[in-house]
Length: 110
Ligand code: HEC
Image (cartoon, rainbow, N blue to C red; front, side, top):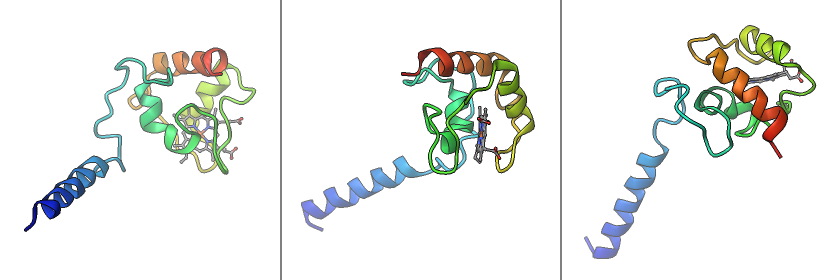
């Protein structure tokens, strides 16, 4: 094997490693572990971002959140689920994280 080929092969391996295992964030789901770049919780990134985007702006058929919802309805919708959106219990997304994220979405998002 030439040196060039070796470089190419190791780069490919690195890319495969980097892409592996991001299809189910629930296993590594350590919630409440400090703020992400966006200011939203790790739970939000793990559970909600794939549909609503990493800053909750929505995309395609997924609405921007929290829309016109107040905190109580926001939490109620998350707990109950709606349409295509699955219900999310407190084990996956703590009440405290939900409240902090609601605050960020309504006051900090530019
Ligand atoms: C599988 C994709 C999916 C995931 C994951 C998801 N949502 Fe949704 N969400 C939707 C869809 C689709 C709707 C619109 C449902 C409808 O009105 O029929 C929605 C609606 C909402 C609404 C209501 C918006 C409005 O203006 O009425 C809120 C609030 C919301 N989502 C928050 C969240 C939060 C917080 C999370 C993470 C805990 C989350 N969603 C995870 C797909 C998703």
